[in-house]
Amino acid sequence: MYWRNSDNMFVGFGDAGASLIEILVSLSLVVMFMAATLPLSGAGGGGLLRLAELGLRGSSAGIGAPSAKLRTVAWSSLASELHFYGSLAHTQLRDAATCPLPGAPSPIRAERTLPRDGYLPGEPEVPPSLGRVVVRLSDESTIVAVPGECPLRRIVVQLFLEGTNEPFTEGVWYKSEP
Image (cartoon, rainbow, N blue to C red; front, side, top):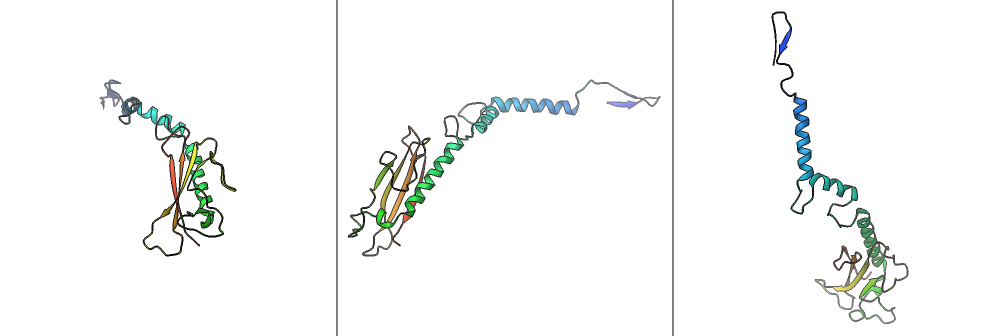
């Protein structure tokens, strides 16, 4: 607190208290310390430090989660595989039991695992950073079945990371006769 004396000079208690800037800096330091040491969730780990680490690693799912690059490669591979199967003729994707076509080439097996079962001509290869791709072909039931026509085919592509039994990502494509 300051005031003027009889000589018109400022007189006060000097630097007895803290300035507003000092208070704001102190509060900021306390908040940063708390954010760095308190967990974001019940999973444990420092809040701000863990968030910074995950940002640098390119992951938001936690320790041991696939990196952003691996996720991008996986989804790109899935899209390529779906596009490949979507470009095949229905005669190649049909089930020979439900859609017999005399003189047509043999259809693709109903379940394939890549790279173990080998690749079809023109099929994209599974990148080495990924585990395996499982492709399943099945008939899809429709409301109205047209007699004499082959049923709609459902193409399911599942991508598994190395050493896992749960699919990392999955895509579905439907194919009908032209």
